[in-house]
Each structure stands twice: as structure tokens, then as C-alpha cells.
Image (cartoon, rainbow, N blue to C red; front, side):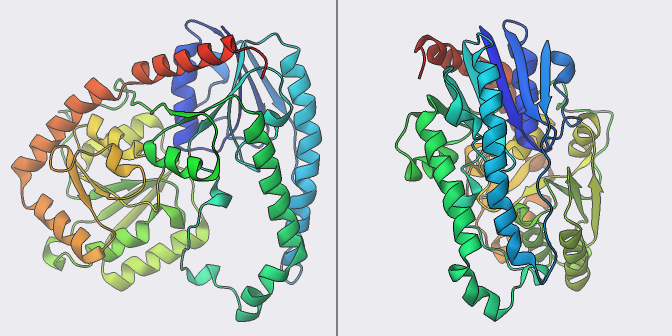
Amino acid sequence: MRIAIFHNLPSGGAKRALMEWTRRLVQKHEVHVYTLNTADHAYCDIRPMVLHHLVYSFQPLPLYQSPLGRLNQLQRWRDLGRLTTLYQRMAEQIDQGGYDVVFTHPCLFTFIPILNLFLSTPTVYYLHEHFPNQVNRNFERPYLRSSVLRKIAEPFDPFIQMYQNRLRAIQDQAVAKTHLFLANSNFTLRQFQKSYSVPAYLNRYGVNTEQFHPNEKINREGHILSVGELSPRKGFDFLIKSLAYVPEVRRPPLRLICNMQLDEERDYLLQLAEQYGVQIEIFTNLNSEQLAQEYQKARLVVYSPVQEPFGLVPLEAMACGTPVLGIDEGGVPETIVDGVTGRLAPRDPVRFGEILQEMLNQPDRLKKMGQNGVEMVRKNWTWEQSTQTLEEYLMQTSKAGVH
């Protein structure tokens, strides 16, 4: 097949997944990539893998500081118009390229790209998550607090309504024009299908077991580990509060590995850890080899993101022989076999802390869970399996003709 790929992705699991698929697709197909300069191209770099990698330039309009912050929604509304013009031009170029199918991924600005709205070539969009503006996540942070008057005024702010209505209209139109949707988990699939009644199917991620594997030369250390962007949605504050219920003499240090960070969230977590008496270390921007070593060194991985679409971190940990204590919500339960490769716990810091202590008190069982995790990942969660399923859907879509 002749495949065009579009993405405007930051660093993170979605970009890692795209890199793994691209690495395997190029072995059998001709793959060209179209993207924007706003994407993170250095992280999980796919540029050396493909014959053609075209970057379109887009500069978002500047945002205002208080007291003019309410005008930012107007700036974002204007950006949607500018993006529409850019994506229409990109779609024309792709349609002229003679591709069999276009495999599209999220855009930083609209999630499903406006590009899909204009393409005539059959198109598959991958749901790394449901569109965040259609998902309710409420976070309590001192730095996120708004004044009472602002909260009262927001529903009546015409700029906010203008932007949100335009964004939702664009998403609805792009969904209607997209031939097929693939999702990384049943959780993501269910969220999406609550909003849209269109064809959507499951195509899970995998794990690169050449990068993530046990290493007997590396000794397990005393800390526990969590991985993800340093933002409220990853639930690191919950881990700190849960650790506070572990007796101080047995409380393990918590190490966080983050691909990006919000400075305000870092400051908040450091203050919270001091308040609860939890030792915490934060490392950012590790490469895949360094990340694998961190999995291999940890006693266990703890993972409590809020409504996480898929549990890639638990799978990478299990591939390294490290058991996982995960939150029993979102897509996380689809990757951890409770009692076999790790444990699942509710979003209750007391209960989470109790289960954590149970796991730490049973080193032989921890070791067995780690061994089970390696076997399960190698059997059921390979990128080769994921790519084979993806190829079948891309082929089906290409044969369906012009959408």
C-alpha cells in the first residue's frame, strides 16, 4: 500500500505508538508523513524511517495575560479558522499523492484533525483517547483556582461559547467524513461511541520487548516508580496521599519519570510530598533505554492516572519483569491481570496504600508476578500483533474506495 500518515503529536505514549507502527509499516509499504512544526519530532523520531516527511508551518496566535485572559478564547477561535485554511491545502496535496489510505492521528489544537474534513482519500483515524474537550475531568489545584465571579461569568462569556461551539462543530464534521476509527482500548471505544455512532474497532498498542525486557544485571532498588507527563491527569498527587498511609519506617521513596512537566504541578507535588512525609524524585526527558532501566530497577510500578485511555506504562513495566499496582479505572484494568501480573485498587488512598503494603510484604509473590508479566506481554502484547491488525484495517479501508 501507499500510506500517508498525519500527526501533530507531543511527546508521550501516542507518539511512541506511532513510531512503532511506522517502523513496521515501512518494511512492507510506502509511507509518507505529513505533520506540523508544533509536533514533537525529536521524541520517538520517525523522520529517518520514511521516504517523505513534510512539515507545514503554523504559529498559534499569542495568548494574553490577566486581565485580558478572557480574550484567549477569541484567539483560539481565530486559530481554528487559520488551521482550516492550512489543512485544506494539506488535504489537496495528499489527495494528489495517489495514496491508498490516510492514517491520521490527533492534532494538538482540535484532537481529530481538521484535515479529515477535506480529504477525499479513504481515512482511518486512531483514537489514542476520546476528544478531551468532550470528557469531564475536574482537578483541584491551588494554581487552577478561579475567582467566584469568574466561575459565575464563564457560562455567559461569548468568547468561550464561540470557541467551544466552533471546535465541537469541526469535530463533528471531521468524524462524519472519516471512514474508520480505531481505538486503543475498550474504555476509549466506549467513551467515543457515547458521542458518535460511527464504525469504530479495537486495535490495541503493543510493547517493544527488545527495549523493555528483564535485566538480571540490574539490581532492584528500594523505591517505587510511576511514569507519565507531570500534569494533574496522571494522578501523582493520589500516589503521594496513598503512600502517607504506609508506616513511615516502611514507606518507600517514590520516583517519577516524566516526558514533560508543568512547573506549577511540579511545585505542587513537591510541597504535597513534604506535607505528607513522602520522599520523591522527579526525572524528565529520559530516552527509551533509560526508561527501561528505571523499570528494571524499581521494586514495583504504581499507576493511578485519571480516566487513562490505555495502560501502556503497566505493559512496559511488566515487560521488564516489574509488577504493577494500578488504579481500577479507565483502560488500566485491560492491561493488568489482578493477582497475576499485579494488583488493581480503587481510587481510595487508604485502600491503595493497604494493597501497596501487602505487595511489598510479599517479595516472593512480587517476583512471580513479574515473571507472569513478562510471559503475558510476550504472548499477547507485541507491536507485531498490533501492526498486523492495523494493516488489515488499513487494507480494508483502502479497498472501500473514496469516502
